[in-house]
Length: 180
Image (spheres, rainbow, N blue to C red):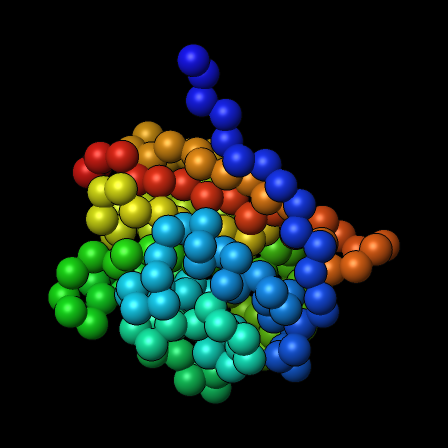
């Protein structure tokens, strides 16, 4: 038997958070389920923007945010090109990670801090897989589907649309299968 990743398309409502690049309404709770995290699991939101203002279920009580822009008041202010928070509030590895970086230089012009190199989606997935527990998942929302790191397996790719005549993004999910 061969392995076949989950494939689907989510047609979601426009974001309810007034922030360029905010998650579509309905995305976060679906994404959390696909990465296998309960509302109580510690999830790290990488390139978080204003995810903590998401009005529906999906942002958990033990979630943390990391962003380069201190005005967004993330839990960790850092350039994800250089570092990531290696452990959660309990000192252990993250139960799951959701990544939503700027997709293009054109998109990046809509943010307050634009003078930094865009995070490479392949490197972000690789770095994030290294800070979750074995058996846990990392998901990334982007225009591309990054390659799977050597210590992970590709689980799913879901098309994400916000109405007709808009760009399709993909939500790609990877599961850590072993330590580096």
